[in-house]
Length: 203
Image (tube, rainbow, N blue to C red; front, side, top):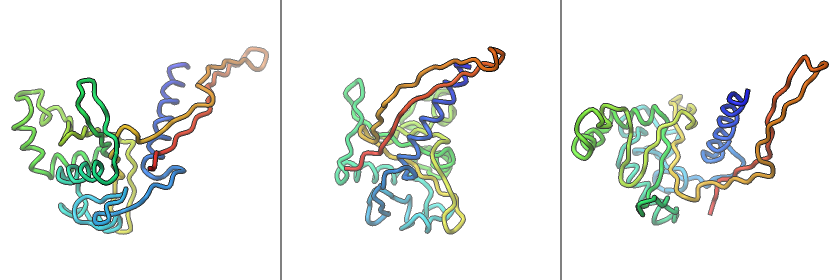
């Protein structure tokens, strides 16, 4: 029971984080587009999420989009990078698995970078399925990234670019383990409870 509750709680807390970061939570995240470059940016030449089509340059993720987004995050949004143990500074980007697959399949530059800059042999990301890193941005595929159909019925993923100050979490009560018997000790109930909140940091 403890292992089952542990897995359930992990999914519960992760889901709250993703909902808050992708704009479905309680925080109003400033919006924008390809040209305004606010906190919502479309890949390719699509000016708005509803204009994204299933075409190579109108919404499919490219490495150039990641480089542009990183530069804008550094200069305009002043997003704090994540400090690594070796002193290197990184950013992160959570990608829906379909977005990651599109990046690997549709962007010839990705395959070229893996061939020429990564280790040769069976551990190369071309063979392991890893997405890896681009321009100091760690690419992390996860199915928890939200996607939904736009007005043109195209499934659009809300991939998340983040730095060191993306979200704050506070506990009023940490998870507790509770066991209780009912019906003259013939039935046992096991539960966990906590009081927690998350907010996306908007500066």
